[in-house]
Length: 565
Image 1 (cartoon, one colour):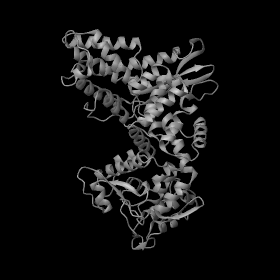
Image 2 (image 1 turned 135 degrees about the vertical axis):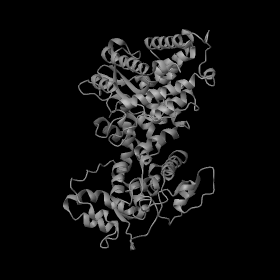
Image 3 (image 1 turned 180 degrees about the vertical axis):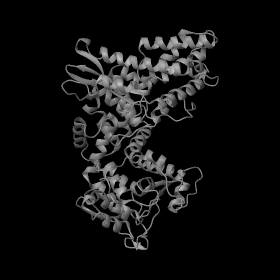
Image 4 (image 1 turned 60 degrees about the horizontal axis):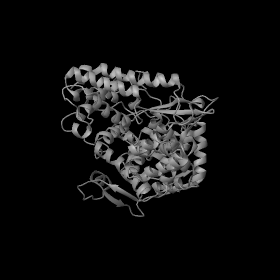
């Protein structure tokens, strides 16, 4: 294709174009059209790299689901419990640049091929064997608005038209020129990074309309803004309460809210970690990568069913007996699944130990060792993922021999092994936070198989959370449903996910408190997302002595960096 002659140079050129444009706006503080320029300046306050899922979804939404991306992209990094925070702190490394360039060339080649060009390139060039600036500008302007999540600046449009002309003249093919220019756009910083700009007025910083549109759409749909949302931003409607509420309600009413909800909980529960899950095949012969993927899908389907389709409270996730089974999971559960098409709804009996999403394989397998269960890992996950209570790392040189030796006849069960291990003062403090939660799950081994004994000894599944004492998954689920920290953690995660800021951010902590009060215990997911979107913190930036939360030199350094995270 045309890019083969431009290849790496095209990548570097487009990256320079994108970064130079952003760096220039940082230095100049270009005035916003929202308020009089005499009182305003435009500042970049946040830059967040697209996740792989957001990248793929953007291409699918803009150019069609049949545009394929066969290779992998730079892996997403988790920070402070969320990939959504990691995207605000990681750059693109050298290998990542190569991955994005390969994807861009593959995408552009499909868009200009004979099977797609007529549908995707609305205009017809005067001569397919030469450049046509007018047609190129029409396509690049329309595509650029969606890819950049804002209209192209005139200088940007001119550069992409020039690239299209150069490519067409070099290859004597109009569509090769479009491919050249499109690769440059896909490789550029304004596409790969979600750049949030704020307008400073009378000492306050507030996001501009296009930044609000992106933040809203990525929070609710995990996707770039659609035409209707960009139109509202162009009219300046998102910087007034009624306009923002109207668009928020539209997005919340869309079926695409399911996509956004899946992405939020996949991030919050670290479900992407299941991609790398491994088990000892001699101990858990039924485990394979298919079961790991189905386990994640089961949990996400349960979440969507409970929170979106049934519109139940968040606490119901920990007490529900309804779920969905695939054929591979049916074998694990010992439940016949007759459907060959995919998934079947299933409800466990009232006396079944499997209650809530924590009794599902995604959690049980994901927070166990390759060859055994782990009450400590499971309890730690409950504390950190669901209660937002970080657990300190173990001190150095801790002897785990007693815990790891599952064949010692003196300690038949995990409870007995942990009791012996925790006799050391250096271990007992942290284990008191984790083990009383994780031990309630010991009816399930490291492969999520159900058991009542370990090494012939009966398993004690009693546990406690604060002042609440209980037994088994049913008791744990009810304890979590009743603990105020569970709901507070969800609200905090929702703000962190939307804003890309960690829990220790002072303004985020205040936002969590205000939203929690406003919701008054109503933790239905639509109400929560709406409260986040309409909160002051969603569109106003915290400042210290009038400074933006991200200094221009810090943002510019991260975008220009070729080093890994």
